[in-house]
Amino acid sequence: MRYDAEHKANIHRKIVKGAARQLRKKGLNGPAVTTLMKASGLTHGGFYKHFSSRDDLIVEAVEESFRELTQDLIEAAKQSGSQHAWKSMVKTYLSLERCDRPEIGCPIAALAPDIARAASGVRKRGSTAILKFRGELIPFMPGKSADEKASNFLMIMTSMVGAISIARTMPELAVRQGILDSVRDHLLASSWIYGGAISMGLAIGTKYNAVILLPFFLMVRLYIFQKAFDARWSFLHISELTRKTQDSLNAH
Image (tube, rainbow, N blue to C red; front, side):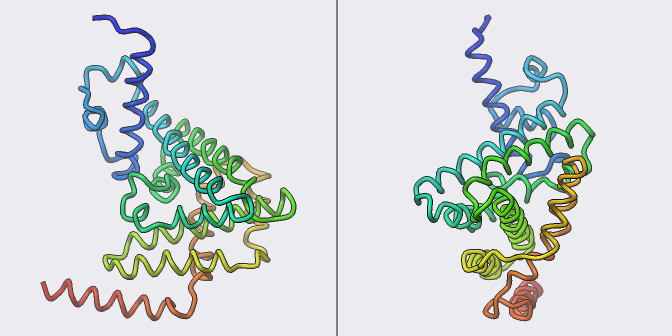
């Protein structure tokens, strides 16, 4: 049976959306083509009617992941009104559900290390998707000028990505929630006067190829995250909760 172009396009979108979730959950090198097709209720045999290689599907799935996240964050921003738009984005991003379910979460937090190690074509498309994501969110950021908004986007994004990444390593739900809450509260209360790390990051991103932003995200987010803890959820407190969690695990 021959299908019309619209039917083929719908199947194509279904495959990409299914792969976007699978890859965020299991990593770029995790699921095979068979698994990715099965996630959409399809068989391996139809794959090459839509994609010339697995990498072609990967780049489309990464782009779809960014589209979904962009849509969710912008929708949250629009519902809150212009004055508090960026704050609604922060609250939406730093939810426990997005932390505990990477398949619906941020592709940077889930896939940045994989993208940085991927083939050049995947890296290029991945970095382009990040820059597109950045461009669409910058208008909602705090700041009086375009430069301030761009700087604050990088500060906010690296803080949130770091919070999600580190929270996911913690087995204790209370610790995960505490990390997310602390970073969220810190960001919402910040006066947005930041120093050299972000200026350096912007200079690097401007001077060199956009791919540089990927390892920079990974490097600077840990620095930002350390600064984000308040007294209630200090590293000592996190360590104590982690120790109790480990004791509980050992007891079983």
